[in-house]
Each structure stands twice: as C-alpha cells, then as structure tokens.
Amino acid sequence: MKKVLFKIKENIEIAENIFKMVLSGDTEEINKAGQFIDLKLSNYYLRRPISVSDFDDNSVTIVYKVLGKGTKFMTMLPRGHMIDALTGLGNGFDESKSGPSPLLIGGGVGIPPLLKLAKMFNEINVNPSIALGFNSEKDAFYIDEFKELSSKVLVASVDGSIGVNGFVTDVCEALIPSSFVYTCGPLSMLKSVYSFCEKYDIDGEFSFEERMGCGFGACMGCSTEARELDAQGEPTGKYISKRICKEGPVLCRKEILWK
Image (cartoon, rainbow, N blue to C red):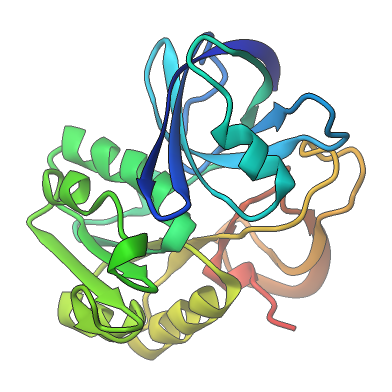
C-alpha cells in the first residue's frame, strides 16, 4: 500500500451516471488487474474504494457510478485537481490460471477491472471470450474497447435495448468451451455465474463488491466467511474469515460461501 497524491487529467461521463476519471501520478504499487484505490474526498470521513480499470507507469483510470453524495461530488472535480489516494490495495486477478481460453464476465460497474485483464491477455496473445451485461443501452460503456481486444465479445441487456435480451449469463452458453472464468459485478450476477461454473465444471475467480471502512484490512468491517483451501486449491473442510479489502476482493470459486 502506498499513499499518493494524484492529479486529475480527465473526469468525463461515458454513460448515464457513469464517469471515467484518469489520474496522473505514482502507480508503482498498482500492478494487477482487479486491484482498487481508496480516494479521500474533502469533507467526507470515509474514503471511497474504486476498482482500477486501467493503469500504466504514470497514470491510473477508474470508472465510477453516481450513487450518492460522495460520487456526485466526484463528478464535479475538475482537471488539475489534486486527490489523495491509497494505492496497491486488494489482491487482484491471477492471469496465470487462465488456461488457453479464459472467459471474462462483467456486469455494470463490475466491468471496468476486466478491461485491464483483457489487455494483459492481449499482450501475451491470449484471446479471451468476453460477456458484458447492462440494464439498458443507456448504461452501456467500454464495448468497443473490449472488441479491440477480443474477437469474441457478447453483450446482454435486461430490457433488450442492446445485445441479447436477458442477463449476462444468458450469453455465456455461447462462449463455451472456456478454461477459466474471471468475473466482477453485482452479487446476484456473481451467484448466477457461480452456478454457470458449477454446471460446466469451470474454475474461476470472483471479484466482490463490499462496503469498506479503512480499505486496507485494519478495521475488519468487510470480513466474510470462506472455505479454507489447501496448497492444491482444494477445500480442507475448515472455514476461515477473509477481509474483502485485504485477502480479496478476488476469491477463488472453491472458497466462496453463499449466505
């Protein structure tokens, strides 16, 4: 973890109530897709954890949805504004597990961290299949960016205004066979993806969204119960507590307990 003072390079709306913010500064501790940064906003007590969508040697991109006063305040931050952030948080995805045909499944604002993952696969000549889910066309973003990185991108929307009429898991059947699943999105979607993985006996990594206090493992506020795994990645029959901000937000399929 590293505390960094970033400068806002860009803060624009890319879909209805969905904003992309590009920050310039020290990204030394950001090294994996699926990590997040924790932003300090003036006059707000708790920091705001936001998934990293993309990063390079001197900039990081985040995508956020306006859900309350804090995120509404973020939309008004201008170019050049300096913003305090904790960086290098979370474990991130492990792309070495992908096998030859990974499947990336994202829903809504769970989609952004998958963009960097797709870029990493592109760099090693792995062509992932990608399934993206939105509520409607007005919520859709990053579709063209993913199509530049993969020849197999399918889209679903709940109201049928873009792509297939249905949920994101409704298009996953068309992307089998797959060797490994990487997914991020709302809890209801993750549960459906979990069932999909069990049906086809596909292992995977799931990135969870959770309310956080500190964002770096000190307050224990985002703890959840999980199955303990042995060195081979198999359940031991024991249960342990995991902090989503520290040991997560990415959990292996076999360690997830649904309540």
